[in-house]
Image (cartoon, rainbow, N blue to C red; front, side, top):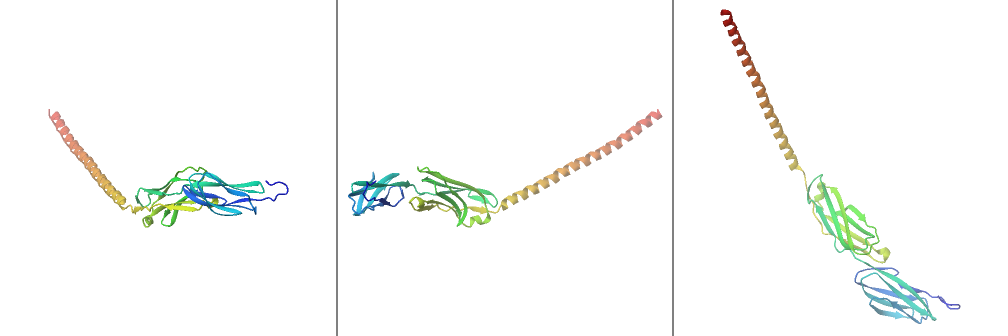
Length: 257
């Protein structure tokens, strides 16, 4: 703060927000509204280089930003010092996007699974993973959370196979929108994966064969049972007739006696 009778001044930094990939370098501008500052500079634990300067501004490049850190810009004007701080955030982009389909051979109308993994990505907040069939979106998920350490993001989606699914490859796109935090729009796409879809004609043939065999077996068993039943009836008829004749002969012998 300036004392009584001293003109107030401001310290400014550009950019106002900064998010960089781990290991990158960035250019930072420090400036002041004081027309004749006594001293000024940039305080940071990072390695820095002064690229250019004039009375009211200094342009620095900071190197090898590997973790979240604060840099401070300061100027002294008429014996009073003002400062401005900037937080630099580090992100880990989706360098790998891994897609898996299982099974890869599926009948029309049957279900299959699409899985997409994005290893070592941070922050998860604002990460959108989209499953694609050609250019058509199958499923999309945006992650939430504030964890800044790298971790794996995974999306799993179950769907039903259609005849047209084998006309275009499946793929997965991972996209990080860091523009609101001083970064860029970063994205990466997996290698395409093909799905083989077939009509379940083989299943219909198996069902038809089983049906025919079942009908023939039924007819065979029925004919055997009918033969057995008719045979028993015929045998009973013969046994019954001979029994009556034998009883009649015995009766005749009795009366003769």
